[in-house]
Length: 474
Image (cartoon, rainbow, N blue to C red; front, side, top):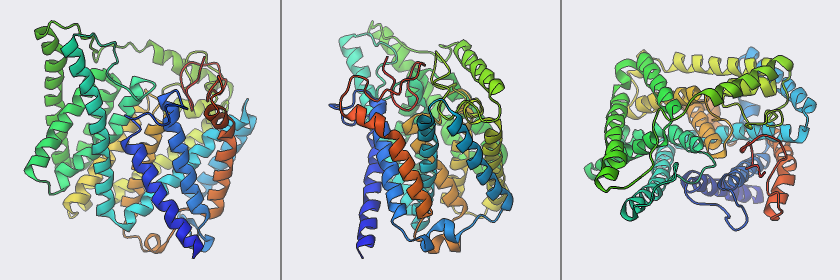
């Protein structure tokens, strides 16, 4: 009885923390009196969320766990996961700082548990959970846009030049904002496509979409635009006319969004004789990315089998803590074999998705299921493309949104699975307990140091610039 009450209390706490992370963290500084950097507050809340999920899983009887009842039917896939675990363990053991390597590995293992928890919630009540996720994202981006446009209006009224990238806030780098934006860009369209909204609510949602695109153009990310085009194109090829409602909504939003951006940041400053500093899609060069990719390639050549260790690009680069490319980052840090295994699992998962949710099979699905399928496919493709030019798998908000999307993908794929529905859990308790111990022990030194207010904060001591797990203080 006590275990049931404890589990319910933990599940309620998970909901509160998850909602707080999605809704408030991009806009509101968590524990500002203790934590200096916005990204460190986001990381603390991410760790809190993962620890509660693992605690909840560890309290559930093994006989009721999803993995205990629902073994992977593909023996090759089982072997791939075992091999990946072996290569990862060796890579972490050989790293310059094994504890920091364990932080990276245990965080991703915990995020995998989080994805399975999202799947579990999805299968309990699909429609309600999807609505909660999409509405939470709408509240989140609305709060962020209020902050952004207040900054813009203030600059116009008082004729104060914006020191670009102001009025963005909440992220250590403008590209971290772009990650947050790109993960939400598809799902916030779902209410307009599949929910029965009042006309006034629909009009506000259209206005919100257009306003959200203004931020994208002002943030001047060519990578986001290219990734978005890739996602649109592949979605159109796979789902053809079934994707058209979503694609049309995106096209309308992007064109009106660019028009609004041009008016607000080009026409209005001219009319007000204000010297607003604006960005441009062609603002950056690619030389910094190429240099980082070359550094990663050199590390791959020097340590092809096991890499330099998870998270250890930061210990082997004087410029950046990660190479802004997911594949090169994994290959340089985890080794080529581990990277190939991860890519194989991802490709196999995409193959299974297309086999079940192809154009013909999707014709008979409901409006909600059809649009959700297209949006989830678009979201994972778009962000996969963007991860080739940015640290999508590195930053805390992006990680949580990424594994939320993965959990939705798994839940949607296995929906109505009889074994999954009768299970009360989402992960093996012993496995959860091991991850919990490794995550807590490996992150404890930085957390204790940061919370105590010592000079170095959450600093990890590597030589590169910029954050990797915590905001590095130089």
